[in-house]
Length: 143
Image 1 (cartoon, helix red, strand yellow):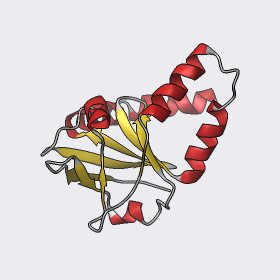
Image 2 (cartoon, one colour):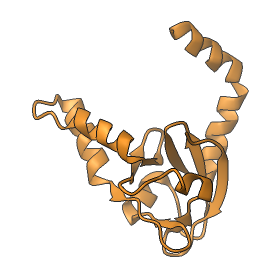
Image 3 (cartoon, helix red, strand yellow):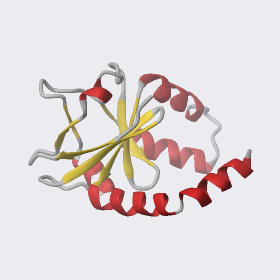
């Protein structure tokens, strides 16, 4: 399980270091692709395989086809270099609003890791924390 927020620098080549606590839980076969809310998501192999299986039905509807194409066309293998960094493609950085020589937020979100542009994370997180009681009550009522 992934939790916590880490602010990391993105170098001029678009690489960023994934915190060691997250790297230890991300086995070979993990993938980085787009996620909801304008972020990049690192999917461990079990999450990726489950998602891929659901999206590989040859008789998908239009929404599922669009989701499948967006997810898989923007995916890259999550491979760590000797310094524990991953390389984000130019397209991934564009989609997530992450610039070279900027700061990104790498957050744990339960079963996966998310990579946010710092300004997007700060705005999103501030709003979610301010509405925490309302969100908690809403989620509890949905059960």
